Length: 481
Image (tube, rainbow, N blue to C red; front, side, top):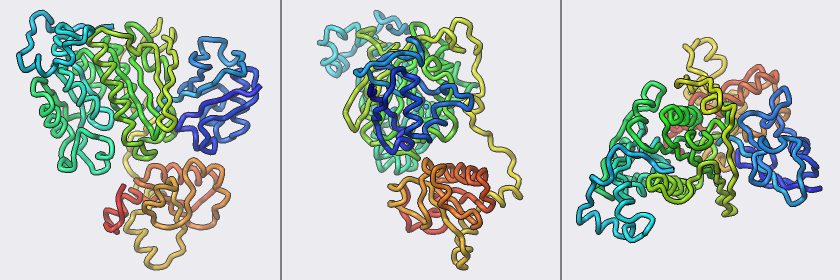
């Protein structure tokens, strides 16, 4: 029988961009195996070398995690759908007694549309005033989140961010404006949120969230909202929330896909229950590499604000034990059930993690070693050296491993083979030629160069800093993106 399998954005490059694939199968295992037979490149991203399904990949039959059904042996019916869900990174007790709070005449007028809702009313608005919410990030998700939390009257909003406003942020980070370019995001965020509601206290933390500061910081707040864009910080936020007993309002975005949930280990699963381990570095592109539709973080961040306010009010049904998937292109929301994993290393029955760890190491991110100039000279080329050699007319072969839409924006010439296609197309390249690989900033091209060397290409070098550095140092007339 024919079964539909939903393919998430990060894996679509390996299914010829198809978001839904139909395969014949009787069980879940057979369906996934037939999918990887149809798209052979997909196999390595779903299965380990031992043939086991990778820990950062979850399979759902309709809205149920197959780990809690009959796993891969679960029988499928023709009306069933399978979803591949890889990683992409009750009420709240407050220390302030609500009965000790009063609303001013101006606050009553400001929050009047809340006050006439029975589920909020005067008591609920006082709960919001007493609440303390910590936002991790003041970017795409943090922008709508912060705006709505401030407008709703959340008494104390903490923001952790150490970045500055860049032109490329403005397509989606609506908390910042053109006049803020070059300013710390914390400064423009404070100014914007205070302008919306001067009754709200804004605490800013101009530092990177680390294992050294997370527990002390989280202890000062009632709800933690994850607006991060990388896996080390996402696992750090989760573990710190579990240890401190704080709810974690989770959101993630990529291209046209969004995810939202509430992880609260005191009443349900945590992030590690869903994704025990992160994907390998480079498998899931960042927004800088993969792009994101500007309005998508507005939708997801607003949903995070909604869940945060529900937690504070202790009203409705929070997304504990539920994961919402949003496909902006098809305008479809899907809800999947999450369950607490009894073997979870931090919130399970016999936890093995009792303190915060090195999350970059856990996520497989290599620490920068001391550079050996001799090795660097062989594996990298500077933009200045490349410019000189091109001007001399040397026969250098340029390989661009970005996406076609990036190439169309700006390029240095040469052959275009997007990184996801390189494993299938590297035979189109001449291993006897010197090849200079480039991308936007050097990350993808470094992975591409390493791959080509592993296939016997002896004269491959990565353009250090990519086209960004070329634009900065060699040709400022080229557009940046």
